[in-house]
Image (cartoon, rainbow, N blue to C red; front, side, top):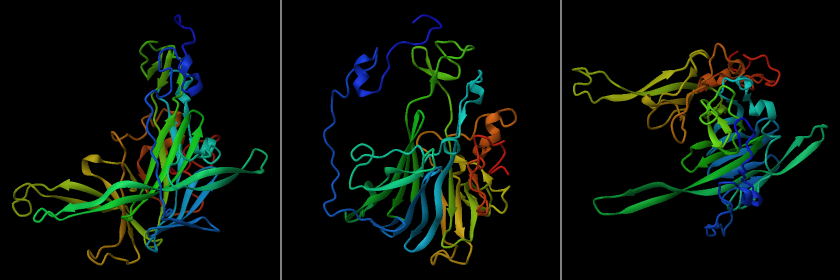
Length: 394
């Protein structure tokens, strides 16, 4: 191509079009993987009861729900008959792009509020999207005419081996014991224009649960901006000659209606900090401990992660239910975790960027608010036409 022209080299991912590629591979997996089959001859360890999509598995019970906006929702999550979560879902996203050249200064998608993860949900297929002994849940949304539309196999549930749960070798006599880990995985996948979002709720044998989000699909690309060097764009990466993938963030907001052994809970921030040297309490300088601070107001409960302090948040029962060993209130710990480097909060400028007027929920990693049936969405009820500043900032 010549300078300033639209790129014409072929760069395809579709299997039937690989042969047209100009410089990437032109054949699909010449060194094919051998078959990997997951079998459960005795069937799965979970059960599903109707009506209400009630799931039971290894002490866990919950109800699987779905709606057009959030997609997959978990309800009434309990462990060994004790409450953990009243409700859990991914409730909003903001995807701001970092190129200041018009029109990209306003390029930001709120993929939950603008599009609806439920409307964008995939029908899943065994062997590709899910592997093993699968239970599928269909979902029903309304179409553009208001008529019901069924999305078959919209939610996948299966068990996965997760390696070693616990192991110890007694060094004195060589006695070895090990326990295998297994997880119940409840998943859904949404295609929002160019991106695929893969959502996995993972329930574990030790009473913990994870929410994992994976990204796939395609990058949103464009010609280098007029102000950019076409061979070295300042706000992106060339993924093909003349094709720029702009730098951007994916800011996810999960709504957790926590109910640890009841609906009255207290939230604390827990930091692990070194203690100052002291002749009385730290004469050798080796002391450090966990310091817990109760978050007493909504203002104080707008928090950010701090890896230097191993920061976590504790949600404890406030109705007098205590651990019989420690005597402290029973609690769950919220642990912020990401694969790879820790990611920052929203990088756009709070004062001057239009994105921040709607996406200010992403200025912090944690917002704690008392439950209110009218407070549902962190960027407000209507993100396409919202004025900004609605939702959590209010």
